[in-house]
Length: 270
Image (cartoon, rainbow, N blue to C red; front, side, top):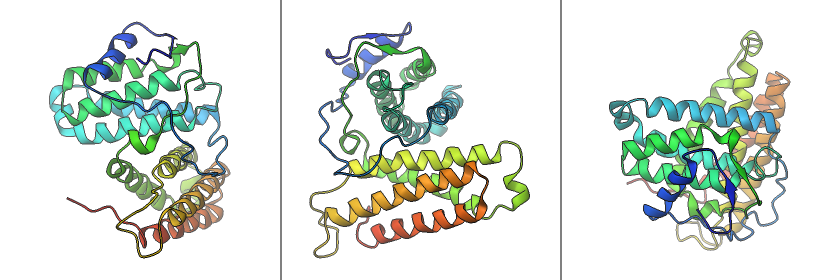
C-alpha cells in the first residue's frame, strides 16, 4: 500500500494489498485534472453506488467460485475489476467512499492484473478482500487516481459495450415491464454504471491522436464524453421515475454522442 495511506483495514486486506506491490502494480496517485473542466459533481446517490458495488462483488464471487469457473471467466473478471475501480473513483465524493477509495481502488486494480495472468488463488483472495468493502476505513482521503493510466482503453470500451447492450434492451421495454418489481432499479444500476464509465473516458482524453481525423484531437473526445455523461445522468433519472419516453430520449442523446466520438476515434482490434 502507498505509504501516504494509513488505513485501518479488515483482516486480510492489508496482506492482499501488499500483493499489488509484489506483482508490480503501479497506481498513479497524482492524477492530473483529466476531467478538463468537465461538469461531473456527484455522479450517483450513495445508496445506488453501494448497490452497484454489491452487484459487482456478486459477479466476482461467482467468477472465483472454482478454478474451472475462473478459467472460463478470467477475462470478464478482469473487466469487472476495472469497472469496480472506476465505480469507487466515481463515488469518491460520497461519504461512503470518501476514505475508502484508495485501498479499494488498489485492490481492484490488483485483481484485474492477476485475472489477466489467470492466477486463481490470488484472484480469489482479492475478491474476498473487496467483498468486505463496507468495513474498510482510512485515516485520510487519497488523491484521485488517473483512470486514463490505470484502466486500459480496450478494457474500458469492452465494459462500455456490455452496459450499452443492457441500456438498449431497456429502450424496448413496455410500460408493464418497467413496473415489474426491481426492473427500474436494475436499469438505474446500468445507467449509473455507464455514468461512472464516462469518468474514465474523460481521464482517457488524448492530447494528440494519430487515429483521429485531421484537425480533431482532444476537443471532440472531451465534448462527447461530457455529452455522454450528461445523457447518462438523465438515463438514471428517467429510470428512477420509470419514465420510458424520457429514458429513450436520453439513450438517443447518449448514442448520438458515442457515434460522434466513434466517427473520429477508433480502437483497433487485434
